[in-house]
Length: 301
Image 1 (tube, helix red, strand yellow):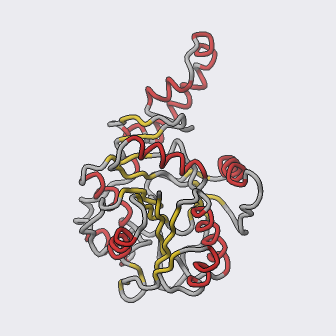
Image 2: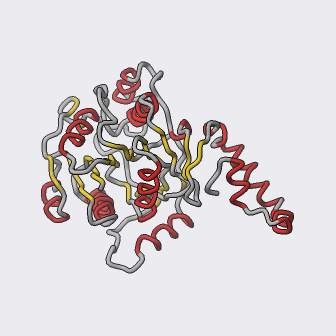
Image 3: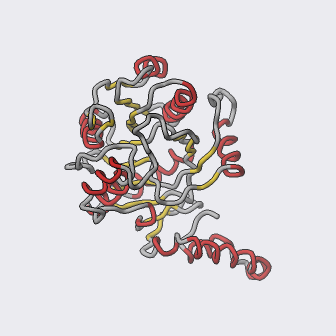
């Protein structure tokens, strides 16, 4: 039903822990999930054998270091067993709500790109997936103690096979490549669906400065600026707020042409304040929060 693909850092220390957590969570989503790991980093082959993951050791790289986006997306679409694919960064734990969102999206239409804002959380140890309801418990903990990241970071892309072709030589893991991917889907007339209100993708916090020349997260370092230039100097960049459709917290998909404006922090604050001020009146009149959420194009506090 769904093929995941990704690339990873060496499986050492905390990076090894969170990457195993992520890969294991994807495998547990459904019996019919395939996972492909690109790259020959230390420990990759062993982890693939341990978790039953397909290992593609070869990946084309910029300056022999950083994987090219176009190679991975082209190769994954070529070899994937399933019609739908999901590239995810290898530090993202996905829960059962992700699978529910996927099923809703593919029942809605065939050609779409599903994305969502991540939740940042401190996870230092391997997640015990043998515990009953581990994913529900983790979701609740993250909602209480995690931080919902701004819409500028796109950590996964769920799409039908064939959506992505003719990708520039973008480098994964550096600014702007993810925004180009959102722009590409939109420009290809795919429905870009923001599932942020419905799902809680768990980004496991980690360090970024792993090598002297690596400045991941910067918008102005050398490789980020290279991605920017390949995106027609910024003209071919979209983020999550540019999605034209939203999957609400109640599981409905609706058109939201003003999504960019509705996602602004000030609008979100006004929406929340209205809910608080009108609670008594709404209760008397029988107006549910879901109604106001729909009017405002919102689906999650």
